[in-house]
Image (cartoon, rainbow, N blue to C red; front, side, top):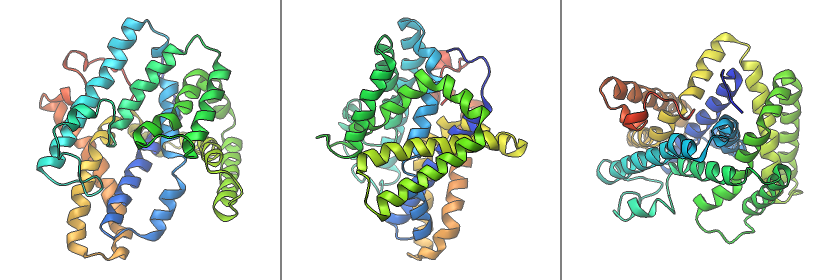
Length: 340
């Protein structure tokens, strides 16, 4: 599926997903330092079924044409870029948390050079989603000749089992692959038709998705009436409808369109650098406010805004100073091989 023009609301949806991820990590570090407001933490927890399914579904849609390319072009233009980015930024994070600051959430990160080898099969940081994208793309191409509906049904069952903790998978990064593959597959194989439907009926999609999401939340957390794995998958689907419909409506407002679509077109720099920025900022704030959780109502939004802004600024400075190789292989920086 060749996309010659970008669909604005998809950029908005992807921008929403990266903002939710930054909020999540910001609150995790606030919580470690005991300055996380309970209200913010609860709201972020409610978004758990939406953050990464939204990212991977949109990524699957955007990767559809690449998956249909020849294996040579596919490996050279897509997989090599992901492997390169994973190597660069996993190493950067390892160096940062070894020599600049201890990672409060994962203290072992940066402690052992062996981690730079182990990361290729058992990554233990947020950069794992680049690793997962490469796996999803190769797996999707290998499965391209299989019956699509049956394959997605099997992936959905695996997702339910993984979300429900019924599979003996200890490492969370491996578990994430099993949980989220179905969303990438669906976006890649059925995204075109679904995108058209959502674009035509955004209000119905957003409102229906929100109502279903709210009902599932009530059934699971208030009444304990839905099994955990099934609830997670269904809530993700409902959340996707809610956020995608909302993204279409947001795309009709020009100021909102420009702001959020810009984030959607520039998720990579935010994704790879924000955790390092957040960890530094929150540690500094915690040293000043001394575990006053009420301060988090102001500092958490401030950290989110600063982390996103600095991440984008770092990329701009890198490109102007000849360090664009941080975001793309030197020979291919001019080719936008991935909408990350």
